Length: 177
Length: 280
Image 1 (tube, rainbow over the protein chains, first blue to last red):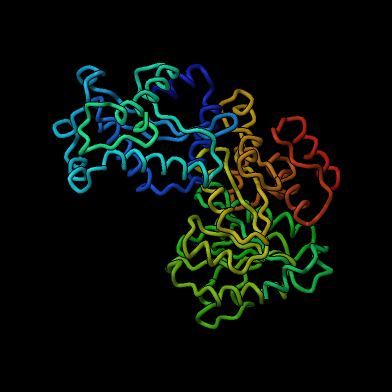
Image 2: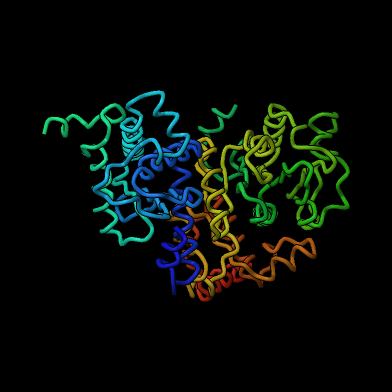
């Protein structure tokens, strides 16, 4: 997030920076997203993302940005390393953090549920506040690349054939194909 | 009580049977609530209105200092609310005006000591005797703020062109009952910095707060010098700040004064100042 602002404001007078900061801070004030909601949204996002890449959980940043006509949610997730080969199926047991593993034990559909909860949270935010788009982003990529990757990421895990059926169910649309 | 007050038209003060009660608040501390209260009070009194200023900042009393009246305070707000001190004993008359009075806050007490219903009743009593009851709110949004707001029918929000101040002002506006129709004073504007893009402009601030703009006050050394002396700068014809406060008072009183300039420029403010100097 800091890098984003640094890029955005390089060379601009501090008044513009104050204006932008003010807009952002009031935005989140008015969104009235309780810090614990943002926190659980963050946790759920990480649950999903960390199945494919190793992320720096300490430096994850979820913020909201005022665009011209809408508000975007930006999730900055520093990637420590890409997990071994994208064609390889993510194996749940060894790769997910312990707190996610707990959920998996509780329910075989935890992975799907996590994704659904993120979707629900995001759409809830949209609905409540009339916001336009949501976006997750990885730090080291250009925005377009990020979008493309994000789309693939959200689809692949569920469609992947080698995910053990006992731990993950593909969504209905993909299951029928 | 307050239902009745809401229906009262904003007629000239002398024609009213009950005065107007206006709270000056900001959320954030140090943005100029007390200075605004003192100067608005002095400027309204200079126009001939009967004005009482109530320092609701119990525990951190300052309005008496800004007005240079600290040596005259014998009884304070809580003496009146709790100890049965009479208003006549507690009201301090200003040195410079026969129609300007101060009810000082208690210094050695806490905001939690003030009972809201008694505060409301006191403001009502004052409204019977004065055209304007100006209530200087403490910073914060806790009980002290609530007590200051409880007896008021109108609100003036003081805000500096600065991120934290605007954020707090936004929060406070959200806490005020809508019938108060808060108006905005943007204080401590530095036109030169705004021109260089190094400070939020009045438009930037009010683009977010979207309140009726009551006044724009430029940051001037004169205000510090006036505070050193305990003299309201509003009474100083030679200063831009004084002119700005007199214009605010005129607007509060319902005069058709030119709207405050969004980006104060030397020329325009000097013109307003000249206008006021010409009248005196």
